[in-house]
Amino acid sequence: MPGSFKKIGLVGRSQQNGLDVVLQELLALLEQREHEVILEDCLGELVPDAAVLLGSRDEIGQHSDLVIVAGGDGSLLSAARTMAKYDTPVLGVNRGRLGFLTDITPDQIAEQIPRVLDGDYVTESRFLLDAHVERDGEIVAKADALNDVVVNSGTSAQMIEIELTVDNAFVYRQRADGLIVSTPTGSTAYSLSGGGPIMHPSLDAIVLVPMFPHALSSRPIVVDGNSEIRVDILQRNRIHPPVTCDGQVNMTARPGDSVVIRKKPHVLSLLHPVGHSFYASCRDKLRWGDALVD
Image 1 (cartoon, helix red, strand yellow):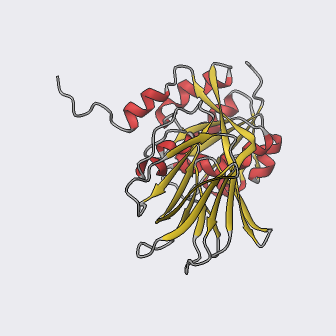
Image 2 (image 1 turned 90 degrees about the vertical axis):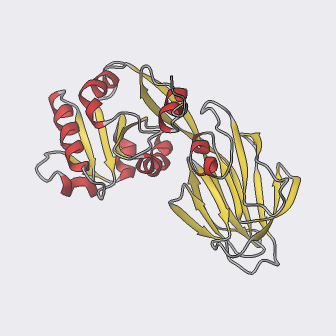
C-alpha cells in the first residue's frame, strides 16, 4: 500500500566489501523521501556521519514497517529468522554473488527502491523451519531456518546411521554423510548441490535429501509442508553430529538423540519489484541455456 512504509530498518553484515557505499546511497534516498530510518547497530561504524537511530535486529523488527537487507542471500537468511517473528516484510539489495532472495542490484537502487516504497511490489510468503535436539525426552538445543536444516557427520571420513520418521511413520534406516531437510526457498541452495529438486517457492512442501547415502537407491523425498520430521541418531554412532540451520546456526547432537523438524508458525514476507520471476532468476543464476548457441 502506498505510503505504508514510514519507518525503514536497514540491516546487513558489516564485513562485506562495498557495503558502506550501498548504505550511503540508501540513507540518502530515504532521507530525501523523509522516511524514518533505524540502522542496525553493527553498521554504524560504516556510516559514522549518518544522523539515524541505531538498534538491534530485534528492535528493528519490532519498530520498522519494512526492513531492507543490504548484502547477499546469507545476509537475508540471517535477518529473516528475526524479522519473521515480528511479521516485518523484508526487501533485499544484493551485494553477494548468487542472490535468489536479494534481487535488487546496487545500480537499481535509485529506480527500484522508490517504486517499492510507493507500493509497486509483489509479496511472497516463505515458511521457515523450527528444529530442536531431544535428549532423554528433554529439548537441549533449538534453532530455526529459512533454507534448510542439515544433520551431518561433521567429517568426510565417517558416515552416520540414522532413522527417519515422518508424521510418526517409519521411512528408513540409512547410513550416509547426513540428511538435508529443505524448504522450497532452500531448494536452490545446499539441497540443489546434494541432488535435490528445484521447488517453486509457493509450494507447501519439504524435501529430504540424503547426502552421499550408502544405498544407491536412496533418492530425495518430497513431503507435505506440515509434516513432522524426526531424525534419530542411532546409539551405535561414535560421533556427535552437528545440526546446522541455514549454514549459520550450529547445534550438536549425540548418539541416541533425536532431531525434530517442523514448519515454524511465523512466515517471512519477502518483497520483490513488480516483474520479478522465479524462473527468470533460475535462468540467470543457474545459467540455463548458456550452452545453446544460435
